[in-house]
Image (cartoon, rainbow, N blue to C red; front, side):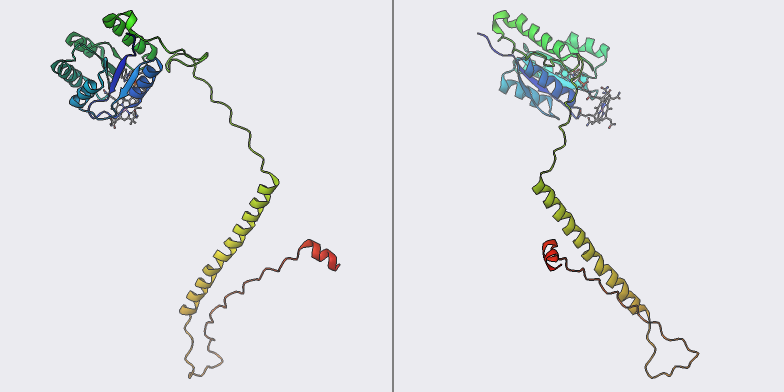
Length: 248
Ligand code: B12
């Protein structure tokens, strides 16, 4: 019976680098596989439990934290203990070649480093599946639309589409915009006014008036007077142009 390959993409440990895992998960899905992504910060137990629950063919770990020499063997051991040691354990991230070799000897599949082609990753998983289950077991690959970018790390990136031409406002919207601008300008004048009166009130408090009973000699200076608050100019009412023309 033909079926899709089921893959669990796991992010074990404290590693917060999830870009690679998401890129690979999307690429495998586009290659016709059923992909489950665990999300960040999973324990090996959680990953293996999810693999069992989802009955996946492949457990694929993304590790960029440097903890691969602990996490891969731990997941592999748990897979074996839970009876799914025959499934493929693969993955990628920041893994030095000497560690790749050591992990391969333990039974871990191929590991992919930075810049790996996602097509290569999909091909590797497909070949492993066909090798285990036979050619007839694999559902046909989805047909990619002509010109589709099949690999994020191969071929030129598509150029961003040009931004659309700015929309010209119609007459109604232009009038509304003018009215809003006028209203805002009026509000701004109103808001400034209380600030002026507040300053004047301060000046009144500071200036001490002379006692009423004391006589003032000609040499004495008159007491400082509080500055009068400036009168607010009232805007002249605008006459509509039509009425003004009629009066003339
Ligand atoms: C972007 C980035 C970040 C981002 C992560 C954003 C995110 N949401 O992913 C931010 C700024 C958050 C970050 C933080 C840190 N980072 Co950083 N980061 C990088 C950087 C520059 C690129 C990683 C990336 O996204 N690449 C693009 C993706 C698409 O590529 P990729 O992940 O490598 O995936 C490819 C392969 O690795 C593989 N692959 C990956 N996963 C999987 C899974 C499967 C199943 C398969 C098959 C294949 C596969 O295939 C992918 C496609 O080619 C690398 C340097 C580098 N050149 O790799 C450092 C790097 C990974 N970071 C590093 C470090 C040290 C840190 C910090 C600890 C720094 C700090 N002191 O705070 C923190 C850790 C944060 C945390 N909580 O874990 C180190 C790791 C060193 C190590 N492991 O030995 C690196 C290598 C930088 C360096 N040279 O020192 N980082």
